[in-house]
Length: 275
Image (cartoon, rainbow, N blue to C red; front, side):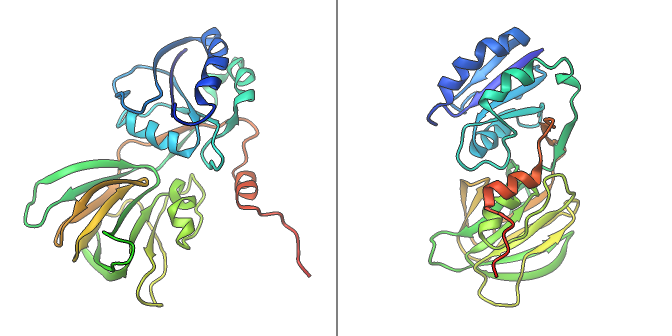
């Protein structure tokens, strides 16, 4: 079995956990690539499994490093608020010893491809992968931005507010959740469009098919943000087009993992009835 190891070395405990668990990993196979800086390209590495140490931020970075060649991810939780990590560090050795590790089910999650266009230019500037969300926001927190939204070429509406999000099911528990959008199961085939502080009470989050082509055309200066990272500034007339990516994010379906238990624990759903 061939492993790649990824994570964020600046996060407390990551490197210690890697070195503690390295012998267990090496007993099960070969480590063919590792990077804990986020700067190395892993898209050309031939491997069977990516073990990612950290929280959701480490996983987002790993997706970017693997690019269009996504291999199944086993996410080891070392962060404080992680909806993507599936096991604790102490559980990894027992899981690695399973004879059926490579035949465990793999869940495929939607990725979005975002392409940036400048005003008056039909040639794309660049394309990006998004696991959580694509966001177009105003340049400052106090400035409204106008965004025209199109779906499959048809005009949907013009939004005025702090910005607009297009979130995947995985990303529905990230910025979308804090902005008042709905939670989608991670394996559902849908996306959600969520306005950020819209300047009208009539606009609400919208769930739609990921197979549509969405275009955000901005009317003021703004910022393109992918998975929480500022990508570039945008000028009035610029646009981004978002579609379903050909690549998919893959996670190992660890026995005993329960998505609703994660939501219950992370969001404090204690089930108590207040009388």
